[in-house]
Amino acid sequence: MAGSVQQKLFEAAFDLNLSAVKRHLKAGASIKKGDKDGCDTLYNAISSMGQNDNPATAPKQKQLVEFLITSGADVEKRYKFLSGWTPLMLAASSGRMGALEALISAGAHIEAPDDYEYTPLMRAAMNGHAEVVKLLLEKGADVQKKVGKNDPLKLAREGKKEDSGQTGADFDKTIALLERAGARGGAPEKAIAKGKKSMPDPAGTSKTLKAMEISFVPHKVPPLLAALCNYWDKSPEFFAGSFEIDAGQFASAKAWFKENEAGWSQVRIFGIDGIHSLYGVWFRDGKASDSAPIIYLGGEGEGTTVMASTWEEFLAILASNQEWEPNDRKFFDPEANNEEQNAVFCEWLKEKLGVLPAKNPGALMAKAKKQDADFQEWLAKVKQI
Image (cartoon, rainbow, N blue to C red; front, side, top):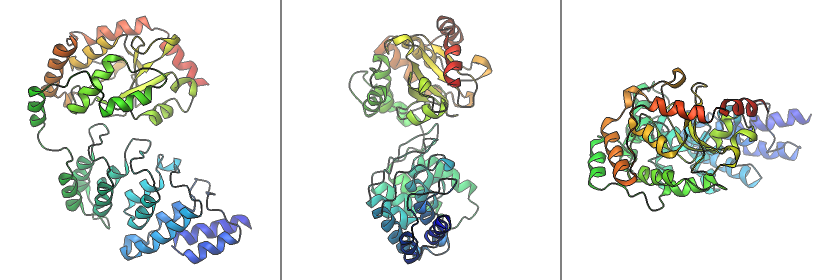
């Protein structure tokens, strides 16, 4: 009987039938309980197809979602089968304005990323939901957020190319909103010229460095990584293939190690690339952060290895910007070597940190692999736990 009442609650929420929802709750159904896939009442209310055919149902959906929230629905729940989407991500991606307004008013985190590090703004942009994009921007969503080479504006432009006439999509308005909000687009040469006039100072504490310091607790951020964080914030251009600095990869590290604490607890992630491979520090044998080896965790299951023994060598490898294939796996996309950005980066490295590009990055990595030959053995053990 309870199962039947619970299912009726889900159906009533999907139909945006508030009175029926209240009736089934009184009969013993639970707001927080989900089905076999984890889909709860809030999920069904947001997933309602009514808005696709009739946007006028938005107030009705907003009223229902507000009721569910005040009745105990979890606004920060992660739906595993949807790659870690939150209710707000679901609303943003689907163009459900009524639900979105209710969730934001309730304090739902507008930057909460999914398992692929995409934000609600990015998901809304790729689907052309202009009104959602407008509201998220008004609430302070990060228009500069990048995942690999993708930012909200780029995703919207790509979405327009692939648009098959989906209901509710307005890519032209979405793109215009993002452009006005300052989404990075256009020629990279302007940013490069700016970088040449005033190269970032390795001192200071940038936004990225502050986030990195939190991510590295209880360890300290290595001095050269701190300098790189400051560089990235002032010159956020790809300077080595699709490599970028990103402190917000805690969830990705846990997922990479399949939630095994013995693995992710000994690694701190500081970078990512276009195929969602992770760059991290391996805190083996209690080593200090500035002397711990730098590792590469392949995003497609290949190429995982020790990359460098010191930060000087790691920066030299990045600066080399060459095509080379450790374990038959290219670290850098040969179609995105970003020669001009790399030249600015190399100039900064030499002038500010005294580091030169590696002439043979493969040899440096071979040396690192030899020095930390027990990495693969350690990796095999933590993955078996």
